[in-house]
Image (cartoon, rainbow, N blue to C red; front, side, top):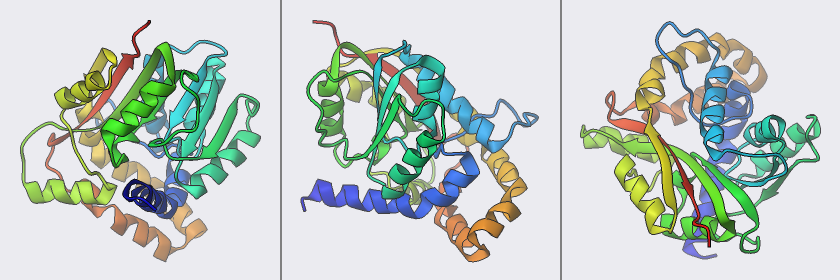
Length: 276
């Protein structure tokens, strides 16, 4: 097994261990949340769904378009795209748990004929050139062992004029390096580009960047809201998974809360593969 394949296997294990409880807390969407302010009272699942809508809306999807959900999680995001836009979505992930959960979730949905989930590594895709109209990479590029290689693969499988939308963490302000290191280790991040650097990575891969935003204060800046919302369901989750498993889950995420306020941001970018 090569270094990249070994790293992908480790990332898959990372998500296999964390995804079951995360899936329960966030209704099949393992990515971040979005709260407008301290008085915003929506549930954690609804706050996470806001990120789904905010990122997928930038793709401009149309009925029957084919979408690759690169790092699809337990399936809710792909199903949402099929339901909202009538798109045909292929989700891939290196987590066995996520594939199984996504397939089961699709089977219980009304759009099972529009979504497909596969175990696969987006560093080495098996799809022919130009297979997709759009690519979604929602908090998945952060875990790529080689960002240049994965962006090249995503560029390859897009048709000319196809779009990519991504969201991820970004480095926004200087702060205690040890806090940043704990954050990155917890999430298995090998890099933490700034917004400017993320734009540069997409352009270096050949994409034309069309839209971008940094909304960290309403995402990581609302960590207190996450704790508040999670506590509402704590006993329910403990009853299902056991106190020991829930305590281990919490311990695994301690480093997530280490960075200073506004040290780490959250970026959303949309770009296009140039037309011929």
